[in-house]
Image (cartoon, rainbow, N blue to C red; front, side, top):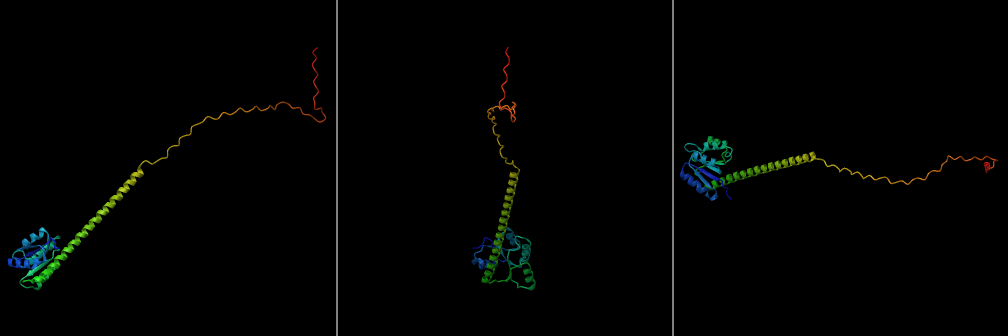
Length: 219
């Protein structure tokens, strides 16, 4: 499916523009035209140009001047360019063109089939390169976002741990003292028998029974 990027055909002759448009029409790409180098630069700077088909010799700004300007800008320096010339090629032109990064140098009048083959290859290769660049950029953005989310999550976890560590510590409830009970009443102990009464000591040979004491005289 053709991309939205257009092919810009630049030539100062209307008949050449018509012939080039007829040759490229079967490809199905969107075609734009310009009749001068200044007009070509305006189209390119607006964006959405996928390839330039550019005449070398034009009044004012030449095709080589247009290429020199495009290569200075980051957004246009990789656009493929096919230079067209009707005055033959020479070593200086060829060397200058390829030093500027021109994809091909084609003689006029062009062969339609050969031109379509070159244009299709260069255009599709450039679009694939742009698509790959967008995918890489999106992947890097996604990875960067994930790293930021992970870093933020780690910071939040660390903050929660600090808050939990600084909070009041849980203490065991104080033990409730057991109620005091009155001591059980103690039963009175029986009195001990007195041991201070003299017990007569009996000796051998003595009468064990003491003699009765005489009764007192009542007269």
